[in-house]
Length: 381
Ligand code: SF4
Image (cartoon, rainbow, N blue to C red; front, top):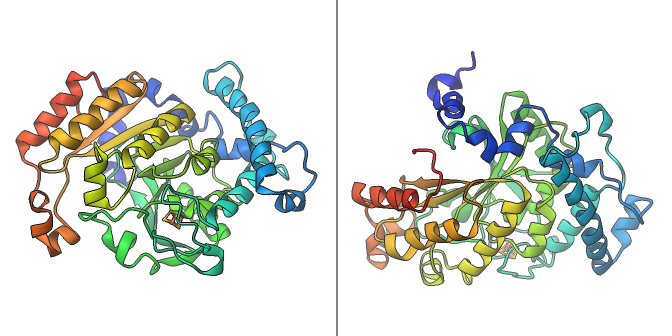
């Protein structure tokens, strides 16, 4: 028996305790159990029309590439929906040969174009990362992995999760608990090539990961390397996107056909708090737009961290928006209670006085009851 079971027995029992999980996470579950291929393997087997070679793709203008992407993705998504809804049997692994150029190749070329000048996230720095310039995420074009391991602390249906922590983040959360990886020492991890990153994924899969979990910092600034790595990976595990979801619509278009399960973090309930606590403009419009879109392209567990003193301005509007804008019968909500003061809040407490304590039991209970009363599915109920 795997040793992690003793640490997280609920990762086994959760399916029995919440029988509706199989339906809510149906695509993820099928891929996890090997009954359907992950989307990235489908995209890699999807032969591009209109291009005879990879070189032709690389020489095409960005405008032309996006036109091709729109056309191919539309057809690919129709196919994937038929597979998801059981209207068509998923192909066997042996039938899924990598094509060249594939839809995944096209996405890779476009991802590198988006990365320099950079438009991967809605900061749209336009940093020439390929020339060594750094954006607000503190990264040039290189991707840094700070750690990769079987994570036992994620939501029960995800454990053990093959988690890869990327350096750098496009947010500057004053309370960030991963501040060393995301902000202060973003480039001190191991610099990885796409092939190295593929090997990391394969090793995690071989060690029993239920999924490959891309997190940070935030994985958005590393989208180009992550998508490229999928051209080399050999595993059949679901790809999981664990992110603040502040990417551009273009970047999300690329990920939409590669990610099997989304783990977005909807933290702030309004732009004022997002600007004050994460220096992030237009937070609400960008993240809600992206979460709504992502929910159509895979399963979703949506997280909200309860911050002390932010129940009325953040927690309640976030939960209300989820209830009113996402398919309640399909998603799962994790109301997270583990906020502790960290990073700048500890260094300059007078600037963010309300964040210098943990949330009270009353605040957590109120948040959980609010979610319950809205009819949201949480793993605690
Ligand atoms: S990912 Fe980084 S460089 Fe790119 S737009 Fe966002 S903050 Fe700027």
